[in-house]
Length: 105
Image 1 (tube, helix red, strand yellow):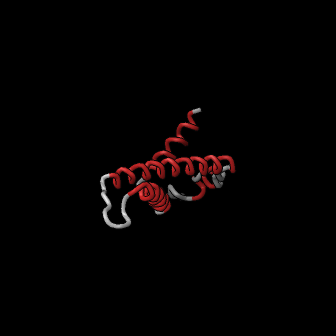
Image 2 (cartoon, rainbow, N blue to C red):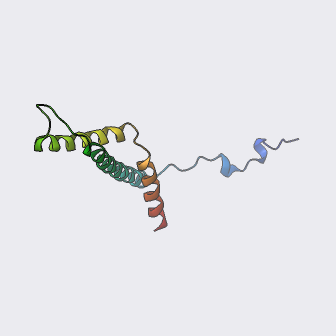
Image 3 (tube, one colour):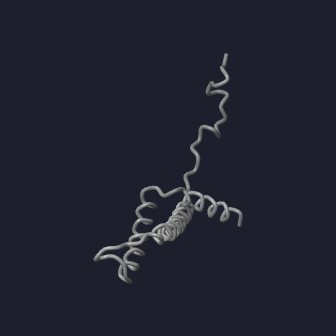
């Protein structure tokens, strides 16, 4: 007597391994991930710049055009590090949507 999960009742197609993702699929996924992370980095950079816009710096070394330039560089670096650390989830959503749109074509 065979049980419902015995090998004689399992389809041979279910026992064969599934084909691995092609190199083209992997390249497309990597490009979508890069684009999504770039978008998230830019979004976070703008968000961080807005957060620091209201902060006034006083003191002998504060203020001026130099501080504005370096604050921009600081917010860009903060955004890059945030995305490298896992981000806030925007890149995952963007990547999923980019791949979905590519499959629709």
